[in-house]
Image (cartoon, one colour):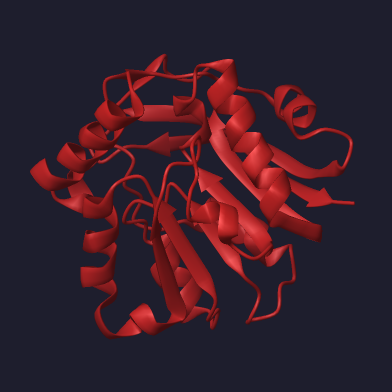
Amino acid sequence: MSQTDLKDHWNKAYKLKDIEELGWYEASAKPSLDLINKCNLDKNASILNVGSGATILVDELIAMGFDNVIATDISENALDKLKTRLNDKTGQTRFIVDDLTNPVKLNHLEPVDLWHDRAVLHFFNKKEDQDAYFDLLKKLVKQKGYVIIATFNLNGALKCSGLPVHRYDENMLKEKLGSDFMLIEQFDFTFTMPSGDTREYIYTLFNRK
């Protein structure tokens, strides 16, 4: 699937269904928040949420007092829905429509304190797309900064939203990130979809040395 087709795929996904009906919708981002709390970030820390979609995590970060949240997604429809829900709280958030595997705007972003990804990385099946993703991550995360990646684990589904996925364990992620990043914590997590079906994830927290 070309990047244009991928953009169309996600725009249609967010146009055709309410946010709460999407398979990856979570009413609370507690697993992510538990890891974010372990980072002990200042409230003005820059938090980049990649593949943000319309995630409730942004609302929860704002409620916790974080005022430098950056939401990026390939789908403008997704970010429009997030903006609409945030309403008058959008002042604490920047919105960037961009492609993680062929970034334009993100290449000019100042370094961030935290890179957060839930359910994006596993959609990149080609090595060149994976390499582009991790190259961007390494470019944007500050020294002493943090990385949270939550992706389908090796027991996870083979597809999501009709697309094939690439599954990971902590050693595969450690290899992709390289020796500059230290694994702080990892855990498996069973996510229950709005439909009642389940998906198996691995959550990881890394610190840049």
